[in-house]
Image (cartoon, rainbow, N blue to C red; front, side):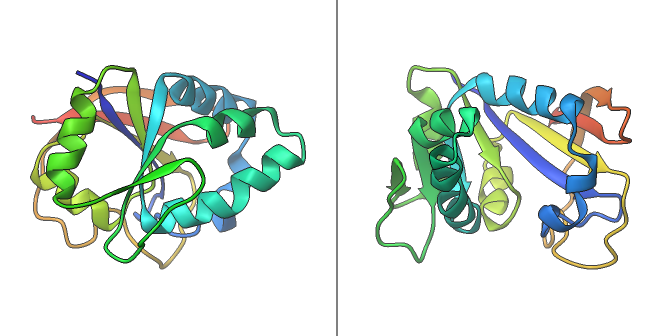
Length: 180
């Protein structure tokens, strides 16, 4: 079975919203190397509507500008969970019907890992049905002071730390699996 891996940027005070505002000073070669290795381990993406729309607006332009990673990002199959979208572009399939059932089915398909970027409403369903196999929380050494928080509204959930990676920039990636 394929693993579903979530990769999320988060501040020390738990903010996940607008990482372009607080994260970019820390993006360096170590950050890129880790992100590239994680990205290379997958052959599909799972995205919520907000992340999908943000990515679809940026990655095609990056490929046109000659970004080497953008071609692979644009070519990867994408599965999009949304209650409001009626169609997708950017090599994406809209998940229709029961999201948990469909994500479980996608995980059973042959292939490599499925990577999920961002944390939001979709995570409530994924947590409730224990569909995420591995979380990569990128803790940035910054306090945002306000904004959307990691797992807002989620009931108590226990995770097991399996490894951590510290970068010279101060970012620490904490890798968790379900359970305790």
